[in-house]
Image 1 (cartoon, rainbow, N blue to C red):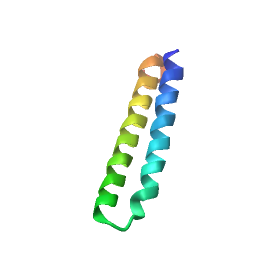
Image 2 (spheres, one colour):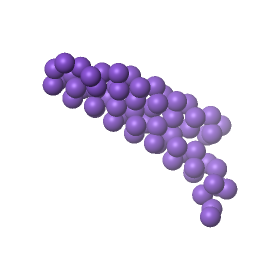
Image 3 (cartoon, rainbow, N blue to C red):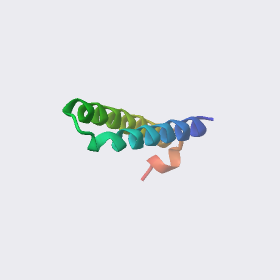
Image 4 (tube, rainbow, N blue to C red):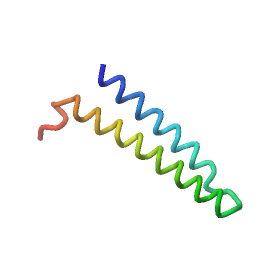
Length: 63
């Protein structure tokens, strides 16, 4: 079950990152800053999903 949750979190993070990246070419500085913030939130979500997946799959953590 945790694997499905991790995959959903990662997918949402990738979607939000793509949404934020679309606004990076905006005209004003305020729009650019907002797009960077949205992109960083998406990358944080995607990263937390990957970390959760690594924690649930013990075989991938061991060397």
